[in-house]
Length: 179
Image (cartoon, rainbow, N blue to C red; front, side, top):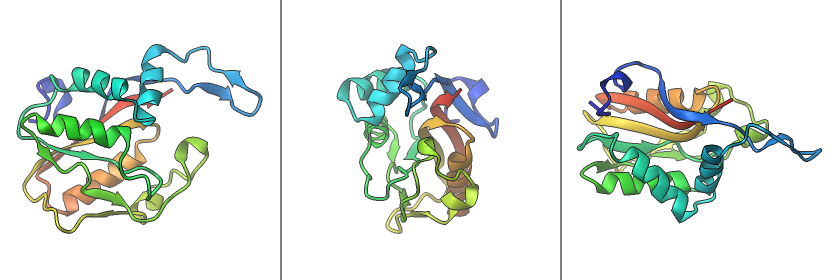
């Protein structure tokens, strides 16, 4: 079991904590989204690696995740951007009686940022994400985390990679679902 909330386990779907409303309706014309809220702002702060946002999400999630779970994070679209707000959050969660495999998945080749129109096709992720060979996840119960999901393709591809490398179970989780 990954989550204390039994309804979140074993669904095969992405567990989403809340909705995410993007900041801009039209970036070029500077039209802000009237639905943009505090929670969405916290996600943007996390993306920027702000310590207060990392602590905020840690306090929300730490009580939801069982001990001994392996923590893994979907890598950034930028192969050079390895340490992110999400990876820092994952590291904090792993320190509390969990297994740190935060960096097991790695972006081997940068892709266009999805939020800015990059291709969302699963093959884009499959061709650009690899694993760290020195780590082994065989038989582990994995929580795969991402900040925002839209189509879910990056999470589903990463889950497939983890399962192909021997993970016993993979539960997918996103802080926000793009609306």
